[in-house]
Each structure stands twice: as structure tokens, then as C-alpha cells.
Length: 245
Image (cartoon, rainbow, N blue to C red; front, side):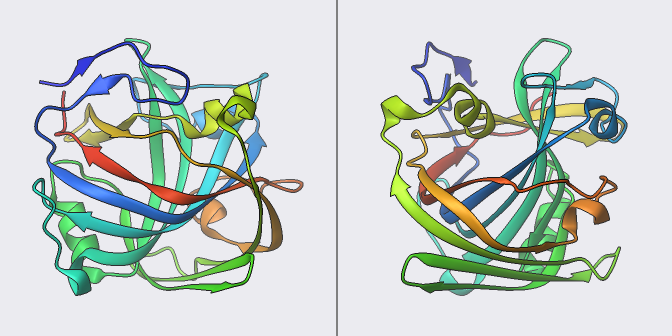
């Protein structure tokens, strides 16, 4: 049974004795925009309340490369490795626990999408054609949704990667946006949660050179205004716990 333990800034406060799966979230970029809280709250299920920072709700567009493994670390490379892009926000449940609500998760492996939709997590995965490319200090992500709709839902991003952020220099807002150890979902009308534990994110400063995204509006959100707050990370290893009511 996962138990909560004291955690330092940026560290997971939970222990997962028997992970359901292990993952590597690799070459990841966080793009975040502030929103009116009411515009995001209306899209949440009963039992979750938007968690704000300085009065704003924050929505993240998070592209990365996923590597999935069994609890003992076994991988099937062609099946287990794929590109993914998430649209997410930050919430609290009625017990006051902080976590993530996913509006959508686009992945480039149809088998992974079908499996994820059928698992007890019931996360809203979509099958997309996706690419990730790197050149020098730049990384680019491309996603075109295939199934199910709404279509077209396209995201084109090019990111300039800057200097690493020393852990002591991570701001309160950066911690709020990235140090998340729980996800929420709904199964048969009931709210469920799952723990996701990993080491502190190694963050880099980053700049959005190109942002042409339609995944946020496909999720029912208003078009974001202004430039996003951007961070890059080479990645972390993650232990995923079982769903809990």
C-alpha cells in the first residue's frame, strides 16, 4: 500500500512498494500558460477543484519521449518506446491532495493507446502521428491526431534549450508546475487516483521558438494568450502505482 512520507522540495512524498509499471519520461518540455480558473474548472469532474498559483489556473502542454517497462524493468523496444504529448492542469481532491488532471494524452503507438484506454486508469489517450527531432541546442515536436477525434488536432513546437537550473534556484512557481506525484481519473463515475514517483526533475531554462498548437483548444480550453513559460528536462525514471478509489 503506498504511504506518504516526508519529502524535501521537489522529491516524491510517497513510497510505492509494488509499482504496476516503470516508465522513463525522456527529452521532455514543459510549456505552461495561465488561465482564468473558471475556464478550466468547468472542464473538471465532480470532486476536483482547480489549484491556482497567484490566482491563475495553469495548463501545461508537455511533449516527450516515453519508455515503458514492466515492474521488473523489462522492455519491448518497438512496443514500449514512443512519442507522447499531454495536456494537463493542476488540481486538488476533496481530501486536499494535489495532483494532475489530464485533458488528453496523444501517443504515437496505437497499441499503447488502446491498452491505456482499457486499463483501470482510463486515461484519455489518443493515437497520433508524432515526431521528435534534435539539432544542437534545439528540440522539435510534431503531433497530428489520428484517432479518435476531434480532428484535426495538430501541435508543432520548436524549443531552444538553455542552461541547467541549479536545484536551489528552482522557484516556487516552477516547483508548483513540475513537482507532481499523483494523477486523477474517473472510472464509472468515480474519482480514482494513482501515485507517480520519481527523482526531482533536472530542469533547464528554455525558450519557445515555434508554437503552433491546437491540442489545448481540442480539449475545450480557450486559446492561450501570450508566450508560454518553458522548461526542458532530459528526463526522469518513474514508478507508477495502482489506481486507488
